[in-house]
Length: 572
Image (cartoon, rainbow, N blue to C red; front, side, top):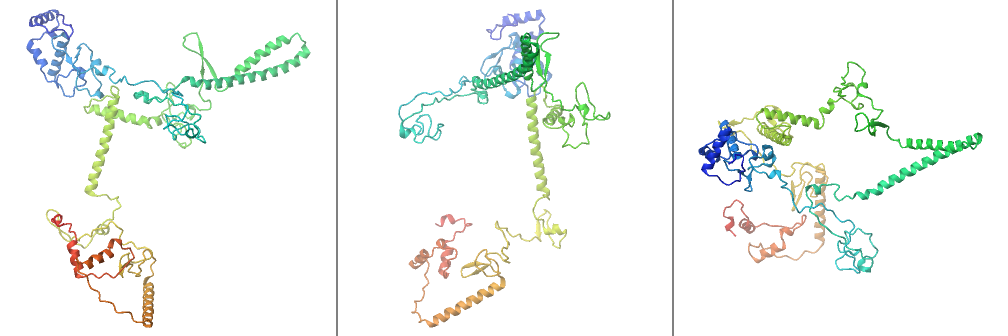
């Protein structure tokens, strides 16, 4: 058997294997001269160590002995003495395929050897490159149909999506001028088709733009030619009167030549034309090259004529330093070539290269030129991890030592530097005595005085109404009147009482009323009272004479929910 036979050939017997090994030894190929025990050991080795070259870079470190055994296994596969490698689909891989074809890129994360990356494995036959049929119509109805557009009568859209002119009376009511149905198509585009800006573009639709510009140029040239001919006719007419009729034909031909030359020069309006030889060494065809350089621009070496200024290299046309360092930065338009090196994306690319070099020196398999995508991805991950570490370190420091830049009010002993307060600690750092009990803070604003008040709303209670203690007013957001307001209110109350007493004295005595009976809890009278005086229905400023009795307090204690009671769920 030939040592370069195909790997999918039928299995050989022991005699054939020994003969093939002997032939290889006689031929001088000692790479396949191995015993049966050696082949068995090679095929039964751990897959993590003998990963095929086509499976990509090996993650684990291999010793020299493992590397030698791997090379022997490859040679045995090429010679047909060892079974060929099998890919993910169960197909054998030809061992003679070179490494640059069988190795998968690193970003595919290939765990097993495969040639899938060499095939067009992302193609989908359902994708199409066709486009919508613009302006195509499918059916033209004669009368209005139910569910059609009320404006034009087409079935493919509704009135809100209709692009026709809004009619005074739509097709639903008139039944005339029914628009045909549009052709509705759906396509499943691939990745490139969805992002193609020119998908479905018809190049023939640009013809009218070209025709418009050509017609304008043609009319312009015709007008210029007519103007030149008129001037030449007037000039030649004066000369013909003196020279005679014999020279008329020659002058006409010369005028036409001059006219054509001037018309040709009129086309050169925008840029100067430079005739250069194209695609030739010593001769041949020539082409026209437009010179786009602005003649008003000053050359770099003319910005500063001092011999000690920035150096200009004529070979590379570069001036790295700033030729005018003392000039106002807002007025100069050129600051040297180094300005471009330290700004924009050039600085990011420089930092990316530096990171790749440092990572390679630390033992990472990173190369900027061989795998730029891998290097950029590692650099992005490095920056993210670095920011996380910085924020974590900052939080730990602030948690341990505090933040002096915060807007929190410092304690009084820290502001004054010292205090007379004595605080005693134990060995573990716990406070034994000396610390005051901190009052719990409310989520509402406290001690905020408005409208010249010296007390807050709710510091005064009288006749079932809240008010301000400083002026004893029960109107919220009112202006404080102080002690004078209190005296005026008392005087008004005394006057009102006097008027009521005088009025009662003049009137007859009222009929005697029955004595009020206090209702006990659970009686019908108590139920009636609670229905009449439901606390939830009481307005803010409504008041009545509430007399809390012992029975009411007993009922309140029985009905109150104790949130800390573990048996509260079994009470009701």
